[in-house]
Image (cartoon, rainbow, N blue to C red; front, side):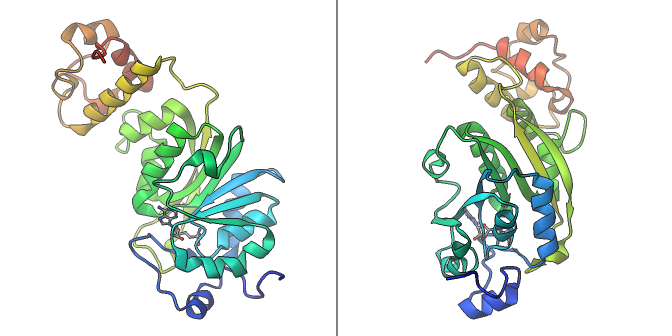
Length: 280
Ligand code: SAM
């Protein structure tokens, strides 16, 4: 069969024809604007033939723009009710649609190594951060991500020390990737319209993590960063009590009276090296 005559960005048509109501729990806000879909794909700067994994294709608006740009697309969708629509809007274009949950899926099966794979997605807002962190931590074959997220989440992904949005996610993303904000996307291009503004972020995986930390110290870094930002109002001495000894701060050259948001990645790395790793 050839592609459906109605394009996937004709959201009211597809919702009506499939008898669907967008699910709030699944963060369903469908792109209803071809230009935005194409703009996202243009900003993603794909090379023809590049393998792309899309998370949450929805009705297929972004998927179709990805195919138009020459990408080889595989798409993971959690909502089985959307499969009959995707079978008409994008499957005829050669897209392989897989039913599954991005929070539980085995990335190795879905995007087999060695890659490289790019992930391009308009992510469901409530699980965007765990999906991005999961990919960075467990799917090295995914070498870059171009994701649309809530504007506040975009701010956190790209933030540096001293800014309001800088937090544990910013540090742990910077450890593995270079993050860049690509642009804003207005709420008006989605059906239903979200209450929050969106922004596009590109994450380019570093060939090596930004710090040279052996395995146990990497886990240590994660523990310290989470604990440090868990109590933003506290000094590091208070927030990291029991994790970093007093002489650890001295050896790392970090003022224990400072707060987590002032520390750059290198300083977190020094703290990880100068705090004892628990046995076992
Ligand atoms: N890409 C489409 C677009 O731009 O029009 C839809 C984007 S919508 C914001 C998010 C999509 O992710 C929905 O299709 C939703 O069903 C799907 N989704 C939600 N949670 C998911 C999960 N855990 N794993 C995979 N897909 C999920």
